Length: 69
Image 1: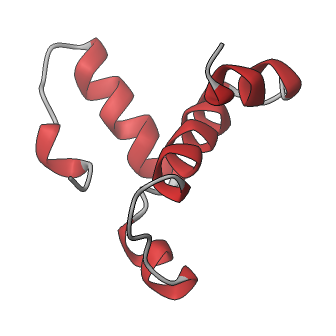
Image 2: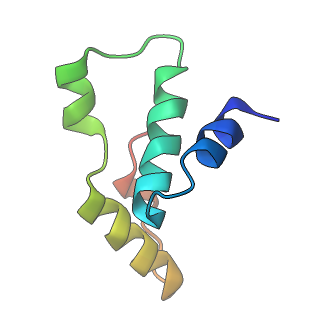
């Protein structure tokens, strides 16, 4: 079991968007060289960004460039 799976299991009450955001934060915090908190807030997608990406992917558009590499 991955730790991200554990995080999602322990936070089952989160909305779909918040669950995605939790996984993004978990992945980001486990990168080799994380940025400072102020810089993270500049590059992390907002709830609205996540909802737009999900809508675009659901309806056939691809938004690969909207998520920071």
